Image 1 (cartoon, rainbow, N blue to C red):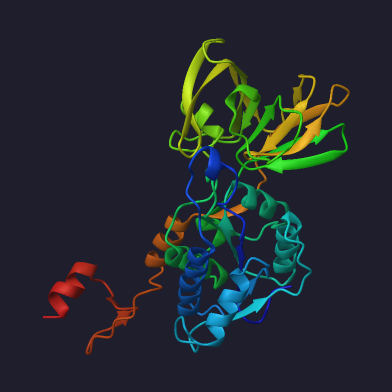
Image 2: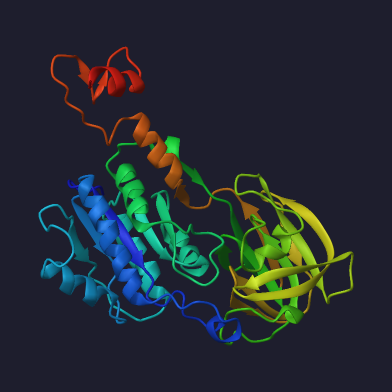
Length: 368
């Protein structure tokens, strides 16, 4: 149910950007201190636009405690212009369950948008529970093919514009594609970027970085400038986020198959991967995994084990989470004159623009 005060959810994954790829590929560590700084910038932007309340996920890693302490002591911004920050009342298990539970609570509270700070794995979890609530994606993970690398202030403005209905969702948002995987017709999971079959028979540290174990790759989209498993497809056959299809690739050792591509499957880790076949997969077209055993990685993290007696099916849909296009949101706000408030004596103005005159005429003619 929608709150009387316009509200936004802010979900910070304290564990994002800290997995094993820091050791095997020298990826950067995204410190929680910087995540807190990003939250303060988000809050400042939301407050300027009039967002009244922000709901956040509690944690045991110190992010929530740091933010709460700073806000209580007025160390970041003017408290009078900041939204009220509420940490959700929920048990903390220090696991992915926390993210699922927090998003569900945010949706139930009627937030107008949810800002997500994490990598591909974090956004995959959020997508399971976000429904039709628009998401503003911010990259703070290892592989970040799905979320954007943007300044938090601008992301906060985009979220505030949507939550305050200063821009129309239909003008600035779109539904992403989503991959589904089903085991034995019972257990189902999803991925936003890619699903990869690995010959490794255990989940282990979850992250995939050993190219020799890769067997099958399904991508919802694949961009040439991406890092992660989807880059294997992106450097051969890019597929945009808005195309109504994805790709399926059969992977083999380098030098075998029809081609070999050297791809950045993790930050700083360029490896050759052989491709035996590549084909488009259309919406709702069920793909059967015929290999005998191994694990399935969802958006770069092994989540599902299966054996020779199991049946796995993968398919693509276009009913994924609703994503805010940050650039479109700001452009539409400019058209709606959200940020402009000129007052020039003696003339008729609409939000600072003299009716019937261009912007140039206002500044160059009327202000002389």
